[in-house]
Length: 450
Image: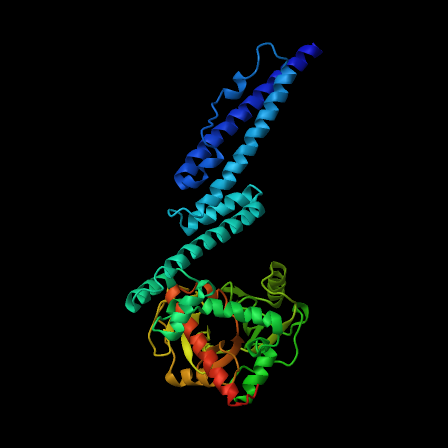
């Protein structure tokens, strides 16, 4: 009986292995079909070899011992699984190059790799593929440009202008830059607000103490804005831990170092508190303290270090908090103005300094028609930015019942990489122009009250 039971168990195990092998082979066939549709480049992974459902089973000689068959099945299954993983990995890498892929499909593909616990390998492979991909394109485009180096001026300029659309600034070959410097070739596509801010952050890493990053601290920002006699909220001199926070009507509680509306609470009264980020009401100090601790635990707020300041209201009677008015300033010039209403629902509106509503590719899903800003308010922002020796700074205000009230300086706006190409290039030009104006002022030994 024991022997029979062992034999039955072996048969069950063998059947299970055969089923798993057949399933793995079916997955390979399915993956192969997806792979061919996604990209023909990975055909070399599996050329003419095709696994038939019963293929591996036919290899076994009649009368072989069950244990030996199981061992062979396991080896075959391991081999097939390895092939399947290699096929899947190549498929995911090839999808990035597929012209039919959009961002949703790409993200789904990446998530699949994470779910398969192979994301790190995938990332390393994707980085290698992208580098080689970029090198190939840069080489091809550069060679194409060289072919027109000695053509007549108008033809060369037309070709170079077209080629510039495929180059990042660091990819443009020297002979094309020489053409831009001495001829009429325009480098409009080369400017980038995103790239400029990225390099500024790298500069901050290398040198530290850049003026706009000094002003990123709220206390330093208030001290600076006081020197310019610009209205700001009154604030308490000290900061508090969540458990120690005194509750005062008509105040705002916010993190000492925060971003956006995360951790910002509007205290109208002891039992009338608004969590601005979540757009919800809180009815007690205990609930407020619990919410603040949740902000810290979730990573929304980095430290248990909170400040209190005056509550700025756009309509105090109807309890409408001040709208955010954010000026994108380029050393004395305003490029864009972002108007935000946060309560009872979040809404965005973009303006140019000329008062024109625009779309920027960022927050464009559901824009609203805001109130805009006056020319006097534009001039105030420009005046402030001209006193900061930096090419770019965002200056944030709150709209009160009787005008704008300074909020904070923002050297690195959140998600600045989401602007569309046209806006990114336009603000990239503004950044470069601001650098030029700042350099000339420094050459003339302009002093700053910084």
